[in-house]
Image (cartoon, rainbow, N blue to C red):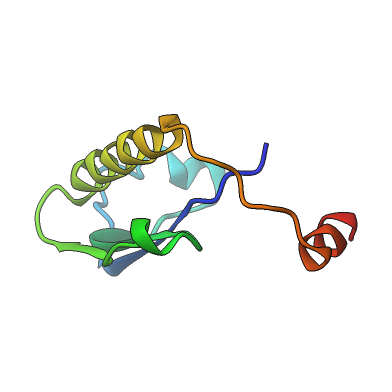
Length: 103
């Protein structure tokens, strides 16, 4: 079932040197991790063609980024669920919308 909402998210990260202690076992397998990405921020935007439910992008940069991101996504999920639970009249079909559905 097609839903009129989706989230577009992007993460900001930087490379840091990996801990040498953690990759001791990797040397035996012929690989060695040199750098790792550290997430330092995100931006998330709710996309919909329903004007009244469009919102500004959420942007966060700081500590505990992934927890903040997951909390934001869960919050968006609750908001979208509430919107979708409302009974609304369907838009009338037009010739143009009928052609779009057939493609």
